[in-house]
Image (cartoon, rainbow, N blue to C red):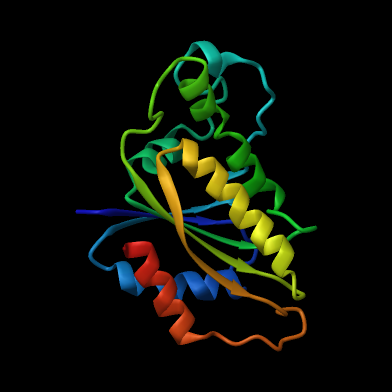
Length: 182
C-alpha cells in the first residue's frame, strides 16, 4: 500500500488549510495516510551543530518518528499559509531540519540520501494575493527535494483568504491531486 504524508503548516484547526486537507484526503483513500501538524509537533530548529555530518540522523530526536514516516512516504503534501512571505516558523523548522539529508548526501556520500522517490505537492493559502511568495515557497521545496529524491510536481494556490473572497476550485483541486499522484 502506498503512503501519503500530510504536513500541515497552519495553526488553525478550522482554517482554509484544514478544509483543504479534508478535501484532499478522500482522493488518497487507497493509501495509508499520516498527518503531522507542525505547530503541535513543535520542532526544535536546526542549530548547525554538525552532528549529521558524521552520523545518520540528528542530535535532536523530536522528529525521529516524523522522519521515519517522511522517508517511507510515496506522496507528500504540504498545506501551509503564507507568513511574512514564507512558511510559518514550525514548518520552516521542519524544512531546516532537512539538513540531515543534505549532510548525508554531500558530507557522507549517500546518493540519494533517501531511498524512496517522493511525489510532492504544495497547497499554499495567502491572506493577500501573495503569488510571488507562493512561488518562492514552492521553489524552496523544489530545490530541497532535488536533493531529497523527490519532485515537487503539484501546486494549488488560494489567495485573498483574509478578505473572504476566495473560493475552493474543484477543478484546481482535482488537477492538484492528478499531478501529485502522477
